[in-house]
Amino acid sequence: MCGIIGILGKAPVTPLLVEALKRLEYRGYDSAGVATLVNGHIERRRAEGKLVNLEARVAREPLPGIIGIGHTRWATHGKPSERNAHPIATDRVAIVHNGIIENFQELKDELVAEGRKFESDTDTEVVAQLLTSYLELQMSPEEAMGKAMGRLRGAFALVALFSGRHDILMGARRGSSLAVGYGEGEMYIGTDALALAPFTSRVSYLEDNDWVVLKADGCSVYQGTQKVERPIKKSGLSGDLMGKGNHQHFMLKEIHEQPAVIGDTLHSYLDPATRSVRLPSMPLDWTKVSRVTMTACGTAFYACMVAKYWFEKLARLPVEIEVASEFRYREPPLPEGGVCIAVSQSGETVDTLEALRYAQSQKQTLLSVVNVPESAIARLSNVVLMTRAGPEIGVASTKAFTTQLVVLLATAIGAGRARGTLSRQEEERLALAMIELPARINETLNMEEDYRRIAENTLAGARDVLYLGRGLSFPVALEGALKLKELSYIHAEGYAGGEMKHGPIALIDDAVPVVVVAPTDPIFDKIASNFEQVRARGGRLVLLSDARGVARLGAKAEMSIALPDVDPVVSPILYTVAVQLLAYYTALAKGTDIDQPRNLAKSVTVE
Ligand code: G6P
Image (cartoon, rainbow, N blue to C red):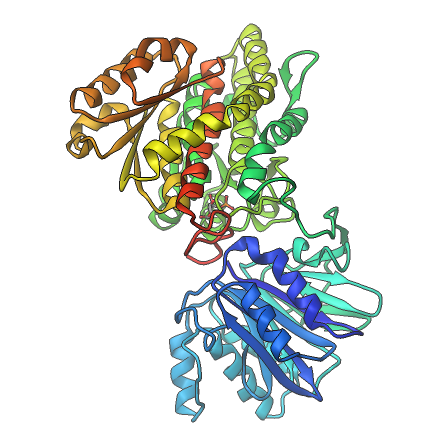
């Protein structure tokens, strides 16, 4: 979703703004723009589509200026056109914005009634016009921003550049993230530490309802009219532009990083010598937990689905899972002594954040599984369980998901141990299965050509694809279908194997490939029956199993792959890598935009 950068510098800023925007590309966007002050006047360059278009524009019409703001836009109000691209400006102020101004219509009606003319279809323009109306009443930029904050509803991060004021940049946040970077006589403001990394490692994170005034030698942060302090932290991120290494896409690089990042994550949660789980200390007693509620969006929600099986089986805990956007508005009663676990790569997804806030209002202990330590979700939680995936740039989540699974399995094992539902031998067995995972995933990655063949021969030409799985493999089937539709735009659905005969079986003919996720676990016979039901109707079967499963069913499938043998409890982690590769190579065969699929965003900061 939208990315923001602002620089109060000493040298021309346009190339730096564009460089920072490149680091925000991973969030997903459909237009981009920059604005600077030239002789005190606001000048803009904006372009629809990818950043190369903006770069070409800036090359044709250079934009001088030593103070400026930049933006990558993921359209919410108004289509992705140059007219609606940010910065949105009047003659007095230019604005970049992430989020949604929910009362924009009410404000717009007021401003139009005052005779103001709007030139875009964006909700953002009300901020520019509102600030302008205050500035015209002779308010200072500080007074105008303080007053505007009181009028705006919704979740947003904003940065403003004022004409005639080379000395200040202003920002404000409510909900969406915004960080301030400290340089030597230069100041920066941006969506996250990743955007600021080429300029500085000294970063402070704004809190909800903060607004900030940046000057060359520092900044002042306010809540309402009250001045507040936000600590400066050292960000460990590298200033180098994230590279793809030897890989064609970030997604492929990130798929290949999984053995390493799973290893890193295991390192934090397992003691290999004793084969036991070690969790951070938590303000809760698992024996007294009445219920676990898990919530997330997208791929992270499927991590909750897998974890539900684990917590129920290993810790004998009742678990409710729900997509955050439904959970937060249904406002279900949550029992005293409950734990709520939010799962989010970015730690920024607004629905997940609000769902966690709701759980807080219900006096739940808040745990989060996140990949970004300073994120809003991390900061709200009582306990943060970090995934060690490193920055994930491909919009479709891969290594973040598998590391979420590792953390959740370790937590379920820890809970099981504390509750006495898991024996020491069982814990050792599971710990060993986890320790072996990086090696098994490596073996799977070595079979990449097999996945490419299935993708090219069976999946890429299909209009619809079904994925079937049972038990722990059901969420993997859902994730496989999600990955395929995200990346290749082929319609795909995941089903619990047993549900197929209640509807989707009507779709089966020789044009619909059916991918069956079937490790030889205790319910293998059941999925084998579903496999036969597809076969009896002439369906084109792709089998993902292990050597035993392939020996039993492989001859009846159009294509099959024997994955390495693993303990069934950890199989979702391994089989996820297989469905990721199928989706990747299908998209590659179709020539779609793998790292930034159309219409998708990475950090979803709007509802
Ligand atoms: C977007 C991304 C998905 C991700 C979901 C939740 O839809 O494209 O890959 O799973 O958001 O994001 P989160 O950062 O909360 O895990």
